[in-house]
Picture 1 (spheres, rainbow, N blue to C red):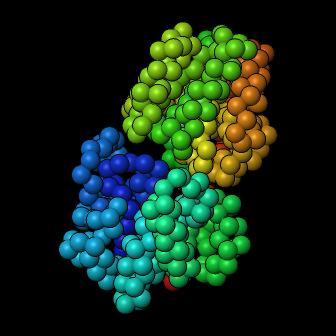
Picture 2 (tube, rainbow, N blue to C red):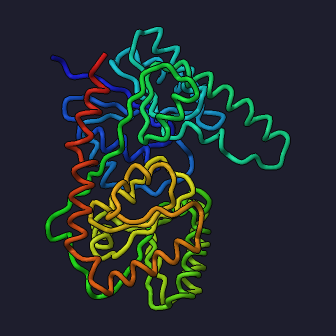
Picture 3 (tube, rainbow, N blue to C red):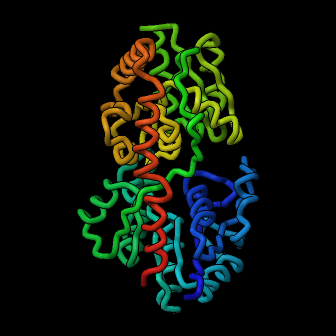
Length: 379
């Protein structure tokens, strides 16, 4: 049986290394019987790149193309990239741009290729609050209708949480839905699951984007927590986007309790996970939550808002607590509760191993990769 050739359109510059890019890269590294080529739009702005991860794409090629109108491949190199799918068996698209989807759909029909849309947030624009501005509102109206036109003609869609699968069915989508969670690739040794008795640390890890990642909620939570118990320490890891000044000010206003480490490498990040007592996940919306999954792979109990993504991950009571969105008072009280449990030695290596074992069994490569392999290989 010959090796399947898969074209993955990332929708952004793969060097941006957000959740979708990271998932695509890790998939290419772990699926040994599939040859993957990435098609990535060339963005002019700079990126923070995890070079060690990009450098590991030894089995994959990257084809860059230019775009217009927010990533639309209506350029010479973009049209050429779309036409190249005739040389592949499977086309997998992460790009939410409806025009890209329509172009790929037409090309897939022309060359009789299987097209899969990696749809990581089908309700995003439909649920997005309308801001003031008539031109923007008209633009969003057209965008939503074009997006729906494209979505409901794509024959295969992959979703990574149950909420999105139910949403598509409720909207009347008749195609094939692959409901396959993201997976954790964190390599956790027995020595990584430790009973940290030195100090309680509440850890936040994520891209510093204020509204999506809920940095304003995080700030409110920290303020309210310290009003109840000013002995609790917070660590924040992350960089980029519009939240760096926001987090810098937060850490300067609470020098004793809040430390911001910025962007850290994989080795240092593992140390933070090992030493953390609690993971804080404050996103307003999420399709899955890779940092939450990573932390739980290291056995760290977590608090998150009750939104899709975290709901798929945190299905057992011992994993942590889902808070009614977006109740920062309840969230702060929950942090104080976990601090008390830590002092009572109930957040220990035994609990951490239980969390880690469950997450690895349910979301590890052994559980998820066979499902991805079937998605890419079946006709």
